[in-house]
Image (cartoon, rainbow, N blue to C red; front, side):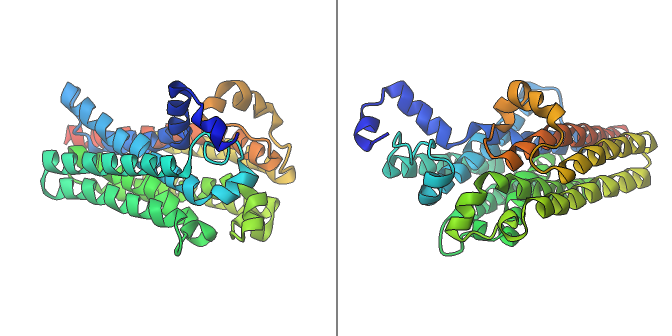
Length: 336
């Protein structure tokens, strides 16, 4: 679509383009960690105020914080997206680069403003943790895509930056919203951080062609699809194993069997995907096409589509385990 055609877009179509550049599919990814942090605190009350505070935290990290990271990424990756995702708002001409900048500036200011409000409302060390978390995330979001640092150029910096922003600080912030940081949350946030890294390196399948042309050192470009699956699976399985050990130490013995059962199912899927990086676990394709596709997206890249099939099962297993453990931790503090 040309820029001339873009100027003829209706108001509704323009709003849709502005929402699309914020990538709503990615917003929900922060919520499981926020829910886990809130549950593990054992201090969230079933009141309108506490639900509104959790909603504000979700808006800060989801539509605003994550939205800013997606918007600014689209701006700096325009040339790559002409190859990888030509239908995105900027390369398709539905948004100009100037409109994309205003989009990201507004998301940045609203995220920062929400962080300042929560800092003022909560106060003390807990308020500082929340404000500091969103400030660091916004900075990371910018240098992730922007030169000269451009963290996304190398998997050794891109995956940790994404894991920190999506999983690590969200656990801490939700816990700090309602209580002092629980000791167990340090472990649970770290495990979520490594799980995010394991999944993030697989997500690079969708842009392997453009990454190679643009000189980006994603793991897929450096070692190939099959080895990328192997590295990711090792990280993910270690997360499940460490979680099971911690849960045993904390005395939640019944949950150990749930976690190990999830690990066994995951390994079954991983074997199929490692043997066939393009067509493995095909029985889950229906879940991607007609079930969770609107939440995790679709792909025409065979390896990335295989990752989406795995992601459906893995995310459900890890989410159930994480929330069950967070609930058990929170219940311990309620009883105390």
